[in-house]
Image (cartoon, rainbow, N blue to C red; front, side, top):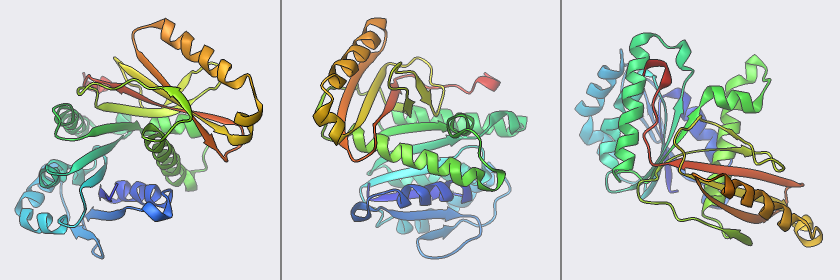
Length: 289
């Protein structure tokens, strides 16, 4: 990707972590939208009262935003945290990226901590972005839920909570996006349909292939497993490929979901497994449906 766009402080912190985890030779530029902060590659929308006010501010500064984004490049990752007041400007900002290849990383907050009006506004933004992605306006939308991420990283000291959550999301996102387009040494890949554009990701137990996903996705249509194996293991363990193949066959036999897998050589110790899970259906917000 050429650049990452973030809107608000929370998404800006996550965007910084994604950039930090990137390869130094391919480190994207960061463009930030803020309520108050000014600086290099930062656009100050001004203080907002609520989501509607944020949208009004973005519309009134449309020409300035277009100029601000003019050098952001053809491949853009748009990072936002749902329910924040400033996220109300998202759709207006995305209007300026229609000619770009845009991926969205949407972080869903803990919905039980939101009051009724904010939950409803989060739902509207969440579903509109999915519909726009499915229609082909954006390349793909990745969904993360903070509660799910917390369950994966487990016990985290309060002072380091968001730092560790963001580290976990950024590292997993980087690995999954890298391996989804990487050159595997072995595997079987299933092509996604044009409608399969809503995705999440997670870590996988090597023996059982049980997934710990960062979002509880419903009506899954495709699962892609990425085996990241220490290169010495690949050279010496003659049973490894058979074990992987048998596990994948069991998943295929369960039916209902397209399954693919890829094996990659790595300097990491042992074997790590990640997955990208995809659907062609808009996901709902269960608490208010």
